[in-house]
Length: 401
Image (cartoon, rainbow, N blue to C red):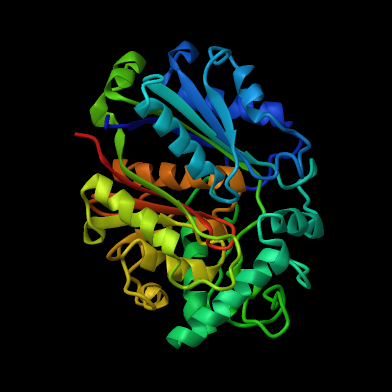
């Protein structure tokens, strides 16, 4: 297989895009990504764009056609991908596959979501409804907010199985809010959330579902945002005029899908997630112990714990403990979600998977703020999911040599 490199990465600040239209968002993502390295649009051979709520919230389909409206992309192989919250990771994987097939040497992956209105306000009931479409119909019955309810059940199961407390999982939320303070692209900034606050059900931090442990601070944000990534072979880098030494290699990728129905499978050890992560490590020829940078899909705090186990930094059932002991801090054993994660950085669904890879690449390049920079970054892992731990897209990154 041909080595594939990240030649450029760009993202908006996550939170609110206000009155930007979908065509404007797509154009901004493409143009801003090109501008990172001064790329000529004609240098790009293939593309892919990921989004999840483009039709249900934005009334816009055929996003690939919007990409083709941008200079240099008309008439080229471009597709829209939807894999729930793993749509961004799937867009990156789609471009990599095109490059491996020989359809080109340079590709661009774009992901976006506009989940708020033009005033920056959100309709929580509507967003909850349309996100619920990414679950099995049989598991929506009786649930007002489908995904918080499903993951509240996962959280309860995890706590009972492993002897974990709400306070243990609150450590994840508190640490991620602390990280987001220093990330200029994060949605939640200058907001301090102590472990006590994140663990205590009072005020804003209410229980989401009666009788289940999930609280507001256990949840990711409803966000607008976009991200773009230029990917290239060695020949593509030469065409772009980008030195390989200035890039990060996507050394391994893995993708797998579990049954959509959460019930009836081992949700605490999702088979597909472990398969995808294992495939990425095998392709890269790297091991979990070599990883000291990671971005994982913490749509809810329990996924911060499970994700730490999936990437192999904690044993089964020990993910929450890894965070509680401070091992996931930027200056700890492995800096996990130094961006602030989905909980504090934000979660514009289609952009999330690209942003995870992009931030991990910045870590390897020493480009993140000093307070968040992992000392001597070596190998990075990302774990992006969609649905009730159903779709999994994983990558392993390293500095190009």
